[in-house]
Image 1 (tube, rainbow over the protein chains, first blue to last red):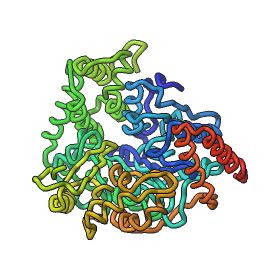
Image 2 (cartoon, each protein chain N blue to C red):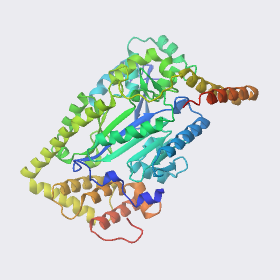
Image 3 (cartoon, each protein chain N blue to C red):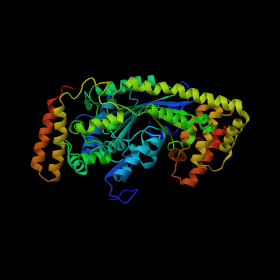
Image 4 (cartoon, rainbow over the protein chains, first blue to last red):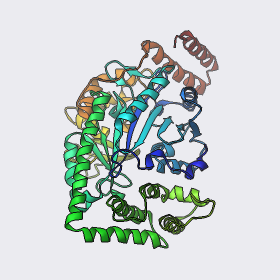
Length: 357
Length: 170
């Protein structure tokens, strides 16, 4: 599997087939680990980094079943390819933009990604569609165990897994769930939700945006604390809150359907109308309108399009994706045209040429 | 350097790490205090490491005490406390021992807890002396090379090989 093949497919987690996937897009768990006998990244020399990469890359190759993991040397990739991986959520922005020897191993379903030489020597990430933390945890726990059979991680009995940044020490674990909350935004309850989450030490971040200005109404809930609580507890901490948020969002949607169905229907239909006919469109506007369409599809107000397509459009209308799909580098104006073309093609069931999809 | 809010000298230098980007802020003591307490109410995001650090250091550290603390360096990787609090990242696992006194209140303020509960690796660096020796020797070797003391570098490389070769028990 090479990078170009990835452009033609979607990750498993985008299919929208997991539990509660009308509201929960994905569940993600990340573990941070470091080799015990090397300095952390900030004090690692080029030679150290190359050695660390080799040790971990070899070990990752050993643990995979049927050779299913693809290794990408991020240092060798061009800017567009790196940006592409960030848009796919397979590597972090930091990993794409930093320098020095580093890489990532990815599975074909794009559920597993192992970053080498990011902020820590090894960052394991598992992402599942919908609300599926327990299975994601089982998968990542096993991967961690298998790597560790032949690797010694930096670990202290009192402080746990030692990480470059003290905000990650202990379990080294970040648990996040990504939710789509358009009705809570429309009914102006989203701020209240944020404040209540903060009180129980959960972080809320708008995806594709900052703070409460989340574009596309996507929000990521994650744990802030990594030390002093077990992995299972931290997963529970996040996992307990999700059904509450799902309930709030569903109620807000019901409310809108009952109190102002025409207005809601109009909103989502107009969004769909613009997306399927515009000749040029920015990514901000696309996010905003796709969010309405997504809610419309969930509520059965837009029969013309299916959920997996909508989920894919969020990813594939982003800048690096568009350029890789079209096969050339494009400036903003050209991207906006290309984006509109892509949307028209996929929302109007027109089959494109052999190079598409 | 002046405080970014007023004309007094800046004694608190905060680096906010937001999504991997470092943002530098410089405050006098009063504005630092204001930023940290005010900020907590407005921010939706998690309390940052730098914020927790600055907050902790604001309590009862004189300028001289802080200057002295800043000089403290890890014998294994060479990082100074000043470097740590500027970049928000440690240099090696041994830093967690070397700076443990300063770290304890910091961990309490970030996590509300100070001890690990949860998963442990099946085997750990029980011989942590070996691990930290390796890190230190590699650094000394790099310095010997840049000082063009190749005899020393060669000797250090042999020491490293001996230690690495010694524990094939994994």
